[in-house]
Length: 114
DNA sequence: AGTATGACGGTTA
DNA sequence: CTAACCGCCATAC
Image (cartoon, rainbow, N blue to C red; front, side, top):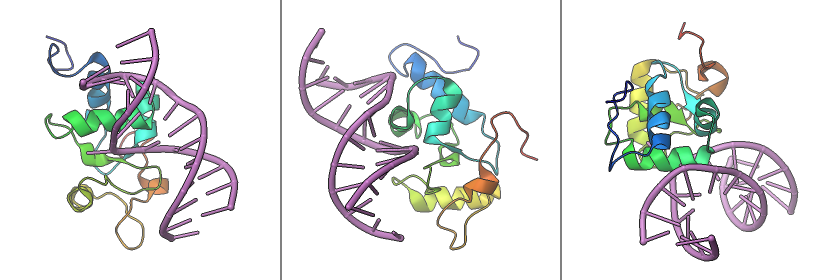
């Protein structure tokens, strides 16, 4: 089986696998926007990334809460749950605590969580 | 192959 | 700040 650990076949498409793999690499306390993930993967857009997470995000063991909108808002599907996990990760939030402080939490891509 | 859809993003009002 | 519009691209049908 593939080294990334995600089985192919009937389930995730190759694109979906690469997206899930990228999301799995986001360190705690850091976040990536949907667009960032698409850019990191090298294919698709924020839309396609969202589609993948909507379908496999809750099925695979992936930190889906670390992928937020460009505005800093968490997933519209489970905002409360996402914020709860982000808070547990120590992710910097904007005043009010309902949105992520992207300026401080956005992951550089290969920088360490430090 | 063509059409519809969506956990998006950026611009404009 | 909110709301509407349009462009984006992988998938499902």
